[in-house]
Image 1 (cartoon, chains in turn orange, brown):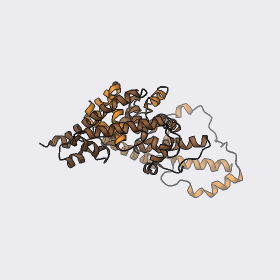
Image 2 (spheres, rainbow over the protein chains, first blue to last red):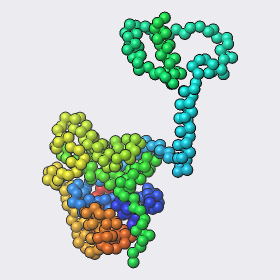
Image 3 (cartoon, rainbow over the protein chains, first blue to last red):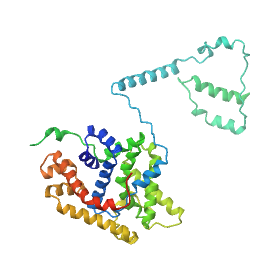
Image 4 (cartoon, chains in turn brown, orange):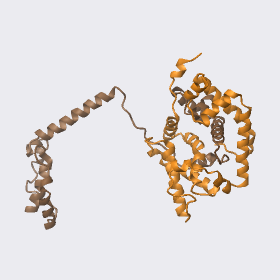
Length: 168
Length: 210
């Protein structure tokens, strides 16, 4: 195990040895002392100063007071899942575009709630926004940027309601 | 006899080793953070001593930097090397400390980690360390040098190529014309022999266990 710790210091541990070596380091104070001595030897050989500096115990003592760090590991899809996810994403994209392009503009597109709405008094919806000359001017000036064309559904309604609210 | 299987085994690399340690900490292994502290404390100390002269204050700032790094670690995504990220925290911690204490940096506060690494700090640190600390540093250096002198030639060459020249095991194997496994073994044996000489000195020092 000490040979492995020496290799870990040099970033030369082989992948299959990593887990077991880190577990051993976690459990054994003696092995952590090997790591400490190895780092000190390297620093001395490189002619570094402050060889007496060792605040690991102090830092670890302070960190004991801290809540344990827990970062959610990024969940990566398995290799076989990637093509399936790409296909699903493409299909969803096509469906959204098709819906936007083909959706009728009127109320008939939402029949499910029609029964429940039977008793509801129908009437004009009055926008609550306070009309000001400045707002009116802004809307007129930005008319050219309002969405138009095939993607007419929701965006067109928003524009119409805003202008209608202002006009009435 | 050359071992091809051994040659093809893929080592992790230093940055990858740090990445694995960081992920261990992120999954709740506090001891793994201790390994990172041990590994980088002197480098960080050297960096901060460019900005703050007093060695006791440098230690406090290094400690604070590591604690801040630990708190920030859930957000670290390994986009940069761990040590680059850590050094940035160290510099910011030192700058904040200087502002709080109404001090000016002993070197330029515009220092970045790469610049700071390149400075020769020998004279500066000699001025600020206590006699006891200087003595300890000197004794460690002398013990390591004496142990190196006593090493067999092949062990000494292997560890010098690794620690001083920064060669990978594969490069050392090419230089020494031997398998990577032999390099690994020689470096370990060199460290083990030097460590045995250091033990009495380190055991006499204040308790560093964690």
